[in-house]
Length: 177
Image (cartoon, rainbow, N blue to C red; front, side):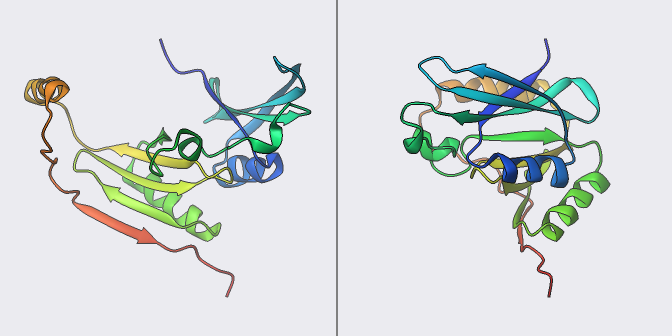
């Protein structure tokens, strides 16, 4: 079984479209218009990732939905969780691709957090809805010892931190100056 799509509500669909199509380079390929259970209607925008017709991220633009003025679009704010807890991550295939995305994001005016987690290397930014987006390159392999340790952590009740990241660096958005 593989991933088909993640669907999220959009606070501002035009800003969301700009971010996902112009910055992340996902392609808008389909919009479905449908009634929303409980009232109102919505437009469901599907963005194809990497030209793959089986992998999408999708956004709902809601209209006339009861209580709409109280909707919270940031997944973490809505769940009362620390920022970045809920996030979504997209895979890259090389360090060069990750560095290219880092450059594109800062040039697009986005602040970026870069972390080398010792087994994967990630960059993070926020979309127009306040949700954290990650691009990640897997850099390590997994052993039977890693699995045994992961299973043991299911019952762990004390704070035993993982090794510190090899690198944590913030990159500021580039301005037009």
